[in-house]
Length: 214
Image (cartoon, rainbow, N blue to C red; front, side, top):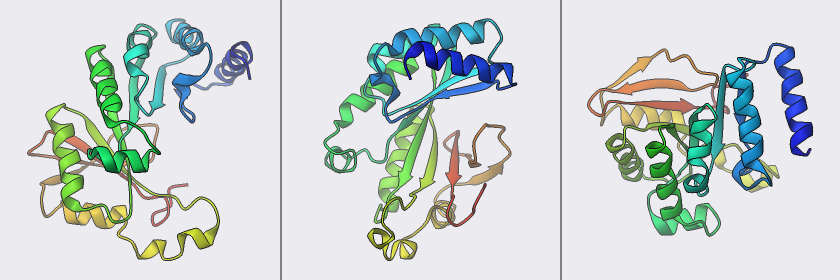
């Protein structure tokens, strides 16, 4: 769809009662003329056709678009980040550069956007690596959601997947390191939230395989 068709489709959705819009992808910020599309969606918020506008991104293009998002009523963004190890990040993201994502997160916060980290919990991720990410996020007042990896593709590619530690097990282990209080947090998503008392941030856990939420 081109931008005009996309805007018409979203406008039709608002007429049917849709009030919340998330821009996602792939990576939405590489879409041609994305700035114009963000401005068009922002106008729907300004005209009270939409209540909220949010974005999911890998973060690398946020230095260019953070101000545009903030000026056009996009209040919240989710940034994907699995690890703070540059080499591991390069492998997971297929040659991505960690410093570009971290720079993007900083740009978003400086623009006044509410940033949340989405982290796919990968097999063989150590608890120390998870704690490093949590502590880094807490220093920047960023909430983190850990997401169970979905086996997409041929089933044989995921043989033994269910033998790996899952997000529910991660939560139980984190409770031994942190004071976590279950919270009821109103969102448009499936996260189950816990408040990390000593860090002052929310940790979310999404377990679509072992705790189906559909």
